[in-house]
Length: 436
Ligand code: PMP
Image (cartoon, rainbow, N blue to C red; front, side):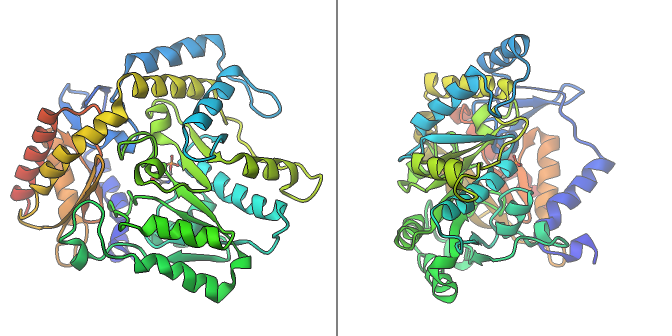
């Protein structure tokens, strides 16, 4: 089958092919803007890939990385360690919600997800629940590209052609355009979708299920906002049945929803949490999994069976440059009050993005925190083509947006000003009007 015959989520890759014919390159970046090799400014409406939350080229972060490179370029964190990794782990442990006070480091979001799934399975085994091996994700969920991530992920094209983990189910996703069309912020419908978890528990038996993993807000599937009460309901059901709840906060972490995590912003605490991206402001790759002391102890002491040490970690877990970047990034978030700033900007942002409703082709506008998804009506027979056209026109006009299928996703750095929000949305509005 040709790529275009597949699910529209294949489109980003098709778009990549188009870039090859007409490459769009970045040469440098500062604050809210990228600059092309010929010096053109492109306003970053997507914080890179949802990661540059404090804006580009931030001096304290750059200097921390430079300093660290001169002091200690590399040290393993297997049996050994270095102070910055411990410092970052303990700082994160103090910041993460609930009792998530221990941290496993990884090199990316995908690694963090695969680590979290292994930790969840190991924890169940360590507690003597060897049969709790099933995992539950969500349709349209995105959890990176590792084998664990594509197994629990719900974007079919990520899995196509690969043998994935057995014993995985997917909850229905939480988007119904007809109903979502008149919602704003968190929809009030769709709570019944969480009850589908009870159906799976009934079908397989709770004693076979290790964990449920969800993105609190689905980003890559086109900004799918959880209905009010949905995450609470998942929390309730999982707790009731001894199933671990994992939040994949790779996108939502570090201020996107106006707090350090979506868990904090939405008031629901999971048992494990993954993060990456904004952890280092995108400057050095890093991922992490937050867990409770109880999970940590059980996993480290008895994951594979009594007396058998849990073997898990990466060469670059807690890399010195990433740890330095992470600490400096947290400093910037804190000293500039960027999460609070995101909260304060949210109503202005909502008004601006909802101004796009009613434009030709726009069939839905969704938002939460400083995120928005603008869904366009697909061109007949060419899913994703209209949004891809918007992407190209936008780039040429000096704004960077992200396209997933027929959704234009926006997630600007949290330093964006009101005037820049106006500029971003005004330009996008003009471009959408010009698109056939
Ligand atoms: N989980 C989520 C929710 C993500 O959005 C992403 C990346 N967009 C990942 C995992 C994978 O992260 P990475 O690309 O750093 O491996």
